[in-house]
Image (cartoon, rainbow, N blue to C red):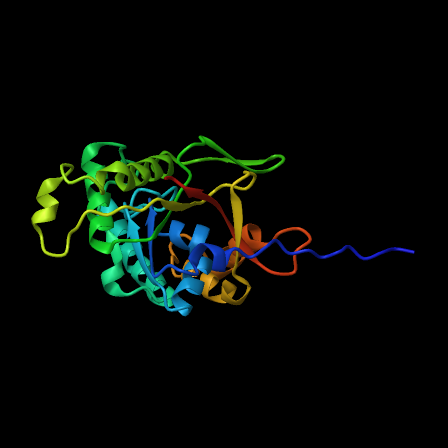
Length: 255
């Protein structure tokens, strides 16, 4: 007799992580990274009445392998697509922020840290979602690996540095504090993307938000078809043995 495989779902950590939070800041290197790594989670947060601000460091305007197009035209196209994607997710215009750093040119330096410090001090988040700051190579599973883009590594390093100690301490970027509504802030909780085998791994159930994730991701039409976006959602949110869909993050509390 053949027994059917037992279907087990990971624990959904949504309530534990987000239950008492109202403001979540997402900092990503390129526009499409938002949907790729956290689209379902963001859609769930917004449906739950949370406020989410998404900061993109670049416009992704150099990531073109074949099409003959100028950087300026590609930036225009990528920004238009990204604004549509944010509307699909439900991000307010004021919470859709572009830092305008050169694609491929994110540096872990004080100038870049200052840009993120300003967003933290203005928005006052209780948790920050960003990329993997540690690994040059991402291991998804045996024989499935990819390079962690330099922009991704530096985006995360900058964001963590901005949260501590730079956004907290008065004498870092004091000129920011002269502006109305800008105050020192402490944020010590992080969800880091692109971790798939780590002791700090947590799971956020996104079963009911896959369609919105796919629609938002497919809005980046110069990079993805609807089928590409669906395949991405299937790849990243399906877990063997689970009947529900999940996005995975490394959860860190940096006291």
